[in-house]
Image 1 (cartoon, rainbow, N blue to C red):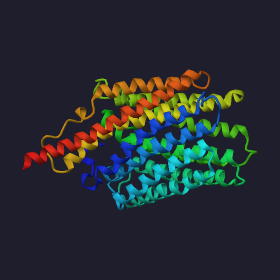
Image 2: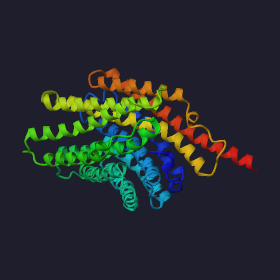
Image 3: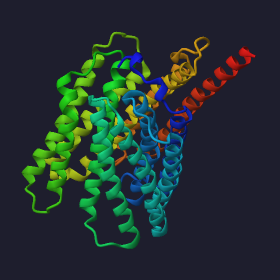
Length: 429
C-alpha cells in the first residue's frame, strides 16, 4: 500500500482509535494482578476459573480492545468507506466492552452467576454495534481487494464467536443444559482461528509492505488464503458437532488449518528477509517473533493430535504460544507503528505541513527494544509455567511491566500530538 492511496478525508477523529489503544494496556496489568490474587500456579490446573478469567482479560480487554479501535480507523482510511456515526459507534463499543470484560472475568473468578448474567448483554451490545457498523461500512465500500475479503470473513467469524460466547455465559449463569465442551471448542476456534488470525492476515497485507518496506504478498496467497481458512474452520466446526465424527477426519481438517496458518507465517518471514531497509527495527522484530510463535503453536497442536496422552498439556502450550507469542507480539508490534503513524497522519490531515515530528521520533525506540526483550522473556516463562511455579510469577511480572511500557508508549504518542498542535496554534497567533 502506498501512502497516496490512503483516504485521509474519510478518517475518523484521532480520539476514536486512541481511546481503545490507551485502555488496552491497563488490561495487561489487570491480568497480572488477577493471577497474583489466585496464589500458587494458575497454569498448573487446566481450565481453572483463574485461567478462564485471565484468558478473557487478554482476549477481550487487550486484544479485542486494540482490534476494534484499529478497524474503526482502518476501514475508512484503507477501504475508503467511513463507519456510520463513528463517534457514537466508538462510545457504544468502548464502554460496554470495558464493563462486560470486567464483569465476565469477575464472574468466572469469583464464581458469581449474577456477574456472568450481567456480562453477556454488555458484551453483546458492544460487539453488535461494532459488527453492524463494520458490515455497513464494508457493504458501502467500492474497493475489491484481499484486505476487504479477509476483514469481512474475520468480522463474520467474530459474530459467530460472540454468539456462542453469549450462550455459554448465559448457560454458566443459569445452569442451562448445554454441551459446554463442544460449544467452548467452537467458540475458541471462531474467535482465535477466525476473528484474530483472519484480521491479522488482512491487516498484514497492508501493514507489512507499507511499514516494513517489503515486497507485496504474492497474489496466489492473497486471493485464496482467507477463504481457504474460513472453509477449513467451518469444516472443523461441522466435525466438532457430532460425537461420532471419525478421528481421521478431524486430524485432516485441523492439519489443513495449521498448514494454511504456517503458509502465511513462512511467506511473511520470507518477505521480511527481502525488505529494502536492513536497519534493525523493534516493531519488525515483534512481528518476526509473532510469526515464529505461530509456527510453534501449530507444532504443539499437531503434536497433540499425534500424542493423545499428552493432548491437554500440548494444547495448553499451543494456546499460550498463540495468544502470548503470536497475537500479542503482532498487536504490540503494530501499535508501535500505528500510533506514530496516526499522530503524523492526523496532523498532516489537519492541513499542517511544517513542524510535524518524524514518525521515528514520536515513541523512543529504546523503549520498544526493552519491551521486546521483556515480551520474549514472558513468552519463554509461559512455555515453562505448567511445570515450574516460578515461571507463573515471571509471567505475571512480565505482563504487568509490558502493560506499563505499552501504556507509556501510547501516552507518549498522545502527548506529542497535543504538544505539536499547541505549538503550531501558538505560532499562528
